Length: 205
Ligand code: TMP
Figure 1 (spheres, rainbow, N blue to C red):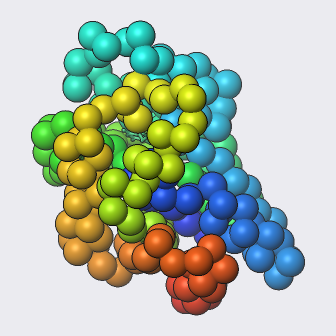
Figure 2: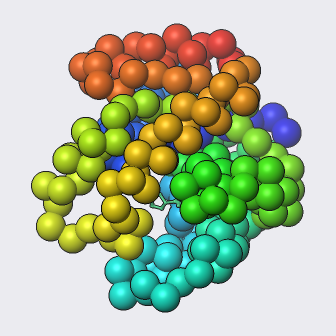
Figure 3: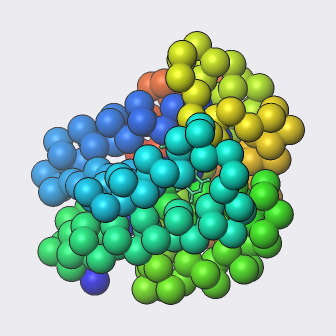
């Protein structure tokens, strides 16, 4: 595969969208053909699965169902968008990828990190990003940013203990894959975070 695959990870409210927009602009200014997508979502079918996953009315959803739905949205995104873009040599930036499942379902829901990676290897055809940017911030800061929004989704409505497990889960996961997952302090000013991300991205080109 010729393209470059970068994912962004972090707790809810960690500022991924802002940083992804800045990185896209940076890469395009350097002449790269950039594709930005997101998880769960990014295709018609995956966006439909996203609706099911994030609908606050779906309180009865079991953890295994949740893990499988995230994986199914991912399988469709891989098949329809990410793999063709990488084969065409494009730079793909994905807002969340398999590490979100490792942390939210594997750690915070307690399904197990290895089990979640195994399940997802099927969905991703074993493809992982060359670089994963982990935006680290205290769970309380992320939740406070989200609380300003009026409609919280099913995941955002989880207890603060869940969000604490997510924030810590990312730190632990980053230690397991230090060559791929790079942690950036998301409490810094936006421009400083962007500069740090650019330094990291330059190492994969
Ligand atoms: P977003 O708000 O960043 O678009 O992500 C949607 C929510 O879904 C967010 O709370 C994180 C969660 N999520 C998982 O629990 N597992 C996953 O595999 C993914 C991709 C997201």
